[in-house]
Length: 245
Ligand SMILES: [Zn+2]
Image (cartoon, rainbow, N blue to C red):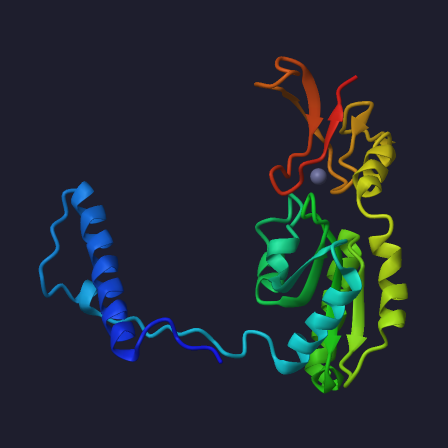
């Protein structure tokens, strides 16, 4: 049997102390800037209406999470409910258009990341019956196109009462078995691509990820300090760099 470490009265006191501590932190922080709080200041006494959701993951998502966790083991980190705008960025010169807001409202169910680099490997959408609705289908189609444009694989898996672990393992193997040493390497290998255009210099190095001309930068520190290299103008969202000839 498990027993709470604190008798109920003690928990109440503990909570009260914690509230006092929070206010104490705020007060001393504001003092640093010469701001004195009034005792009855509404900003401090106000209780904000936030609580922890008990349905952070739906039962179907939670059960799938455990299945997928047993399949990937330590080969990937599973991030649930990731905003698409945290995964993708809009390539220049389109950043002022509505492209970002089209992804900012959307979440991916699960993102599998390389455990070392935390680079995204594959997205997983758990499709329940809502995915057959017309507006949902349009949303899914758009999400599919976003993944395709960015070159990130997306797996769609139908919600089931039980999952075939072997089948899932086979589907995921192609992404997990040969993780990222190659992904960036492949991009770099493709980077020798050049374009010729009447408005562009005779030979322009394109970012292999974004397809835009790269810019020449000079290393400010580190062992290559002072040497030049090609960088993507979409930095820091795109961190592709190439050696300057
Ligand atoms: Zn780039």
